[in-house]
Length: 275
Ligand code: NAP
Image (tube, rainbow, N blue to C red; front, side):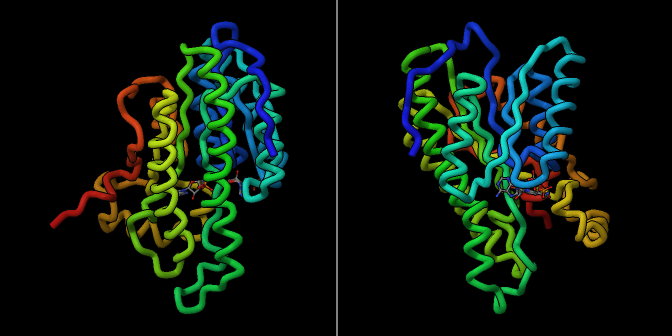
């Protein structure tokens, strides 16, 4: 159980701090790089790929320096599906960087085995839900406790939570039912926390990526190459992790102070129905 203690540092004396889950590869790395360019200190979380996480950290430090920022980047292994790990991750953030201004719930896995709806197993459902839905919910809860304490001590700070959802929240894939349900649920997590945290000045957003180049989509590359060529998206190209990163960086910039509980599509126009 995370126990609240006094905030260590005020925002005026240090960089803002972002915690990005699943930041060792793919979209999480893309988000980390763009936040580094904004001058935020970072906690790069990963599950098992320590080498990739260290590479993200190295690139972020370089990227920040290239635009004149000096940032601190810390790396922390934690499985967001495990309560003890989530507690340790928030404690690590607080103890290593002293505050938390932005939580990006990005870590996620695809449907294990991509089984047809009629063959999907409870075991795989439970494993996916723990990481993709339970993890963000309870990590947001822990982060919110720290952020509320921080806002009380420093009215100038405006912490935020951003959930990385998916077009699968609204587009059906019958061989990834658990993934679709988890992402649809994450939309409600966004609105729930937006409603609960507004009185504390904490805005909560959902960023909804479309088809993005990463290890997750590598096994279905040819399928999506064809679908995109055939007009799946209005903008006929794959999305890149930097596309999602730039959207998150824009939200982190305090540009939308009167907006919360909102969905930002980063999907090349996939959600637009056409005739
Ligand atoms: P990815 O390339 O497979 O990377 C997954 C990341 O999540 C890695 O950093 C991995 O860490 C981490 N991770 C996995 N399980 C974890 C756990 N239990 N605890 C902590 N970290 C964990 O995936 P991606 O394509 O970048 O996807 C990132 C997010 O975007 C996911 O939520 C995904 O659902 C969403 N999304 C992706 C796409 C797409 O087209 N790629 C589209 C829409 C939404 P390790 O390196 O240590 O394994």
